[in-house]
Every structure is written in structure tokens, then in C-alpha cells.
Image (cartoon, rainbow, N blue to C red; front, side):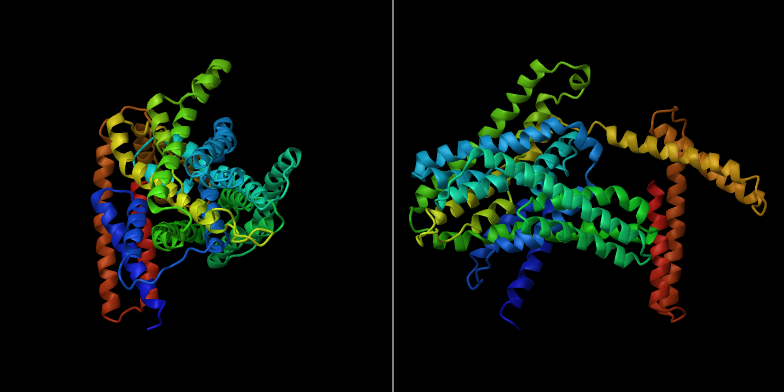
Length: 526
């Protein structure tokens, strides 16, 4: 067996095992993957596996950003534009400054190197935060704020990172150029993303092949990110804007088969890439420890803990001061109704997790300056970055479920109510259209009556769910009907499998029938 094949096989088995274990013990799987990777890195005979910065920034990041944008709600993001913008820009810069002061005071990092560390650990990881918080049943708006912050703060952090690295290497930095460069990167990245999204949507509209349609989505993710990054623009925002645009267009440009194929495909891609990144983060501790030579291990561990604490404290101070200051200045009724209560703010403050992007930026630091000397304190910056990632990911990740239970935070059900209302409106439209079509020739009265009864029963069930009418037992009857329908579908599935085993039909026919039965089964809960 090839020398690289065995570690890869071990990693695959560990990822699956930890995912199963995480579900059993009720711990978010990113946490166990990081800890599992950390432990696996010290297994005797396990070869060191490095995390290439290019692998994260050029291979992993585009599809993850695209998928996040694809599933994001523009309506919700627009509603919280001010909050997300302040956290994605101002909080990133404030965190960068606090970290720089902390690192400079504790281990004597020169200011440019300290600011570089601050830029690296300032952005939150949307994947880590939403993966952990999203499984706890917290209100949708909390998830939107965490997701929006994590998606947009990378652009600020990457610009600050490049400026800090340039200053460390001895280049001059002009404030006016920084502002104009930021505006250019943001605007240029968004425009490229929208342009690529439009091209991809038009291409998908013109293809009937569902596999080709889904593949065009993958091409669009990289097609937006890579040109923007090559031009010095924000590849992060390009991939994100492309995903948001296509997410709006896919329902009208993709075929039914393409939509059915696309959702599980992207769900699996996001899961696999997430799992690989989290376990790779844990695997980095061993090579990082072997590289640090300019500071003692005890000194760096203490500093890493202090920097992680500074990052968390800065976020807490921001969350519990700036919003209240804004409240005193903006008392418009529309803003008053959107205020987030203190318990939810506590969850947002405790969910400022750092992840693979921070570690990738640290590993991407140049090894040499322009004069040929070593990059100042590079190994220490990499170690401190890992310490912050570990501290902000593992500790909050393990305690966040307890915090949510203690605070008794529950989803307010607004999203479920919206969905039930939308399904009810769609059902009403179907009944109106059915009445229009009933007058046409060629449609039997039996068909009209059967469909009308089906949709009327659905309307009563959805009306009860949406609170439009009182539930007089129709919901219970609906549950009984669905139990009966499931039994009938299972009977059909069993018969089809028997026909396959008897050689009456081939496997392709069996899979096509099975797919239709599975779709019918999945719709029973709708």
C-alpha cells in the first residue's frame, strides 16, 4: 500500500467514528474532530500531515463560502446589515488591536508582528459557529448574525493581514491607500461574484442535464473566487456573492432533477470539507510544536491562553456595550422591535469561534523578509494562532450547549410559522388553479374531486399549524393518514426489492422506482 494511503484511510475511519460518537454523546462534531486530530497527531508511527495554506484558501474555501451564500437569506442579512457590518469591520479591527497589545506586552512581539497576529485571529469562523450553534435550537436570528459576521469579516481580516505582513517586511503603509484598497477589494469582489453568478445561471438555464447543472455550481464557486483573488480583489466576497445570486436564481433556472440533486450534493460537500478541515486543525499541533524555537513552550502556552482570553473578552465587551450605545441613539420603532435580548447576546458573545482560515493565514506567512532575514517570530505567531483557534473553538463549543440549556433559550418558532403560512398560501393557489382547470375538457370529475379533497385536507392541516384556525382533530387525522401512507410505501419498496432479487427487473429500474418512493416518503411530513 502507498505510504500516503494508510494515513488517509485512518483519517477517513476516524472522521466517521467521531461523527457517530459526537451524535451519541451530544457534542458538536467539529469539537471532537479537532480533539481527535490532536490526539491522532501524537500516535506513534503516524506521519505528520501538514495543512497547506493554499489547500484551504484555494481548494476548501471557495465551495464552502459559495454553499454558505447559496443557503443564506438575503432578507435576513439585509435586516441586520448594520449589526453585521459593525461586527465584520469594526469589531475585527478592535480585536486586532487588543491582540496586538496583549502579544506585545507578554512576549515582546514587535508591533508589526503583533498586529499580524491580531489580523490572523480577528475573524470568526462561520462554519464552526453555525455548525455548533445551529444544532442547539437557538433562534434563527442568532444564527443569521453569527453566519453573516463570519461570512463578511474575512474580507476585513485579509486586508488587515496583508497590510500587517507588508509592514513587518518593511513596506510603508499609507492610510488613504488602505481605505481605497478596502473599498476596491469589496466592490470588485462583489461585482465579479455577481457576474460569474449571472453567467452560471444562464448556462444552467440552457442545460437539461442535472449533473451538468450541479457541476456548473462548483465551477461558479471557483470561477468567482480565483479570478478575484488573482486580481487582488476579495475572493471571499466574490464566492459569497456568487452563491447568494445563484441561490436566488436556481429555483427558476434549474430543472426539477437538478434541484433534487443539488441540495444533497452541496450538503455532503460542506460536511466532508468541514470534517476534513476540523480534523486537520487538530493534526497541526505536532508539527507546530516542533518548529517553535525562539520561545519556551510554557511561555507560549501561557501567552496563547492570554490571547484567547483577550479575544473572547473583547467580543463580550463589544456585544454588551456597542449595541446598547446604539440603542440610545436610534429609538426608531422598527429598530426597537428588532432588539436582541441579553440572553441571546450572551450566546452570540460565546460563539466567537476561530477556525481553519486563521490557521491557514498563519501558515501562509512568508518565511523570509525582503532583506533575506527570517520573518520575525513566525513560529511563535503560528503557535499562538493555533492556541487561539483551539481555545475559542473547544472551550465555547463544549460549554455552549450547557449555556443554552441554562439560559432556557429556545427557537421562537417564527421560521416554522412562516413556512407553514407559505405552504398554506401555496395550497390556496393550487385550489384556485384547480377550480380554473376544472372547466376544461378532458379532465375527469373524479380526478378533480380527488385532488380537491387532497388539497382541502392539506389546507386544514396547514391552517391549524399556522394558527389560522383551531385544530379540531384534523392534525391527528393527518398523522394517522401519513402513518398509513408510510406503510403502503414500505410495502411497495419491499415488493420492488423482491422483484430485483428474483431477476424480474434490473438494478437501474429498481433504483429509479426506489428514488420515486423515497421522494414520496419524504413529502409525507410536508
